[in-house]
Amino acid sequence: MATNQEEQQNQAGRHQEVGHKSLLQSDALYQYILETSVYPREPEAMKELRELTAKHPWNIMTTSADEGQFLNMLLKLINAKNTMEIGVYTGYSLLATALALPDDGKILAMDINRDNYELGLPVIEKAGVAHKIDFREGPALPVLDLMIEDGKYHGSFDFIFVDADKDNYLNYHKRLIEMVKVGGVIGYDNTLWNGSVVAPPDAPLRKYVRYYRDFVLELNKALAADPRIEICQLPVGDGITICRRII
Ligand code: SAM
Ligand code: CA
Image 1 (cartoon, protein in one colour):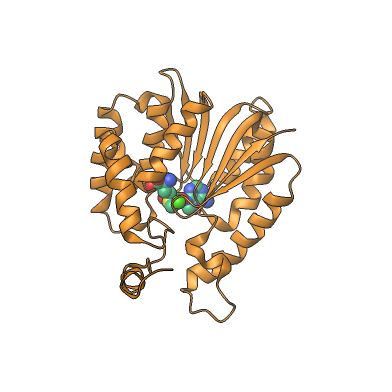
Image 2: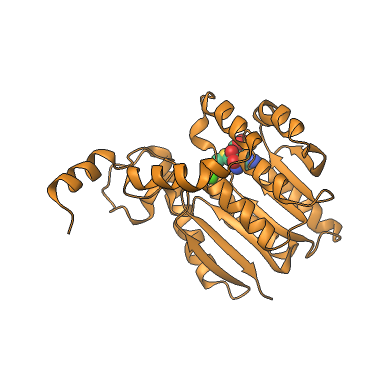
């Protein structure tokens, strides 16, 4: 049982903002994770990019440092070489990926906004990993359609990170499941959507949270029912669902 004082601290510190960096109900515990295990091991370039991104007006979109650390570890564990990222923003998850890949590793990175990618690019270049990145500006879906038509990308990706327009995740999934290797991994980000997946129907949600929530709910159900993948829902960041293609 929590003491009154602990409860008060919890309430005061409870993450209220959409897109907050963690779903943990204790700020102190999250801070502990960052300060003990994440920041001391964060590569210098990732720190620089994180600090640069913090000054940007849309910084709420960035991948958190603990999730960046997780992605970097996951990519190494699966020996990823050929990867894709949908939704780059200033490139924090992209850099976490680029640093994890071997020197001849590749990331096909897509975003409708090139300016934000270019904001972080000097840091990525300085880290010596920009040569691994093939950035395409524009909506991802038509690019995926062309790649599928082409045929040669079938089953070719070790890892795909999806962190863009939530209303298209199922459209992405239909295509990406063909493009990831059997044994490869797709990570869908923000699958707990700031906890709104369990909000009661009358909860006062921001307009965009309410709008995307239905898509996230639908995605989560579809992933859980998809026999082509094994899944693991992790409460890291805003929730990430790891999908391993099995057939
Ligand atoms: N992974 C990024 C990071 O670590 O900072 C955060 C990505 S941010 C949450 C979502 C990004 O998706 C935005 O930069 C946005 O421009 C991009 N986006 C939105 N719709 C898109 C689409 N249809 N195709 C590609 N990118 C899209
Ligand atoms: Ca995200």
